[in-house]
Length: 389
Image (cartoon, rainbow, N blue to C red):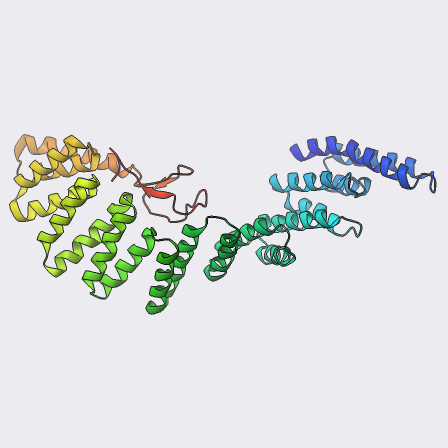
């Protein structure tokens, strides 16, 4: 419906544009042209009235001769079609523009870029890629074309090409360091999946080199070191996460505890966790220390510690853990009531997300380095505060 409304507005413009163009060029040579224009105009309206917008588009293109005065109207119409999901019509409009030999150079580049976006929207990625590569080679629409190429390579998961393209954007002054680091991490994961661990390590080093705060690279490297029983190296990687971004402590605590336990150095672990807790109060640290106290000194010590901590920093996860500790030494009616409370709180937490995108608000229980909603990198983070980590 909106396309038809737009064409109702654009057809008179097309007729006027065609009439003026014809008047400038052809009326003296062909006085029969005016009735033809009038006939085409009413034919286009008839197609719209009969809900035949495809034929109306053809009439529009015929009426609106391409020159410096009308090319922007063509481009606007093509863009409108694409935004409305009418990609086939957008392609026809833009192809018609490009086919005009008299089209000015800057307008041709613009039309090529629009056609590339049409193909991208249609999912014809190989054609879109060829057009944007052509524009880059010609040195036109350069940064815009590189961004579209980046989008294509992300969809295709061609991380090597994504890295090369992002480096060109970096050379143009765009701050894409963190994104390039993520591409190296994606490449590292591919290498790991195919058993090329040494190459994966090199990818992770490149990620850290271009973005020293790349948490993901540290986590992957820690995982690799731990799998190879290099626990001290793994501990260094997980400690690096804490300094890179404290919000991701919850991702490092579990593996860190495992590494220290395998080395039999739990005292060092607790000292480190306590130091982190003083600097970065996070419930994941509280729960890890509480587990250690319970194991070494019993439930009472763990209860006193966690109760003290959640008074300072209220947390649903902390309170649920505290109720679980009380249950261990309860019986009778008190136990039954605590079980009701525990089940209620567990159900409450089951419906709570663990991660949220700071850009679009997307939330879920899995950590995505590329937000599946807004397609931004590094914006999905562990939720903090009462309901978070």
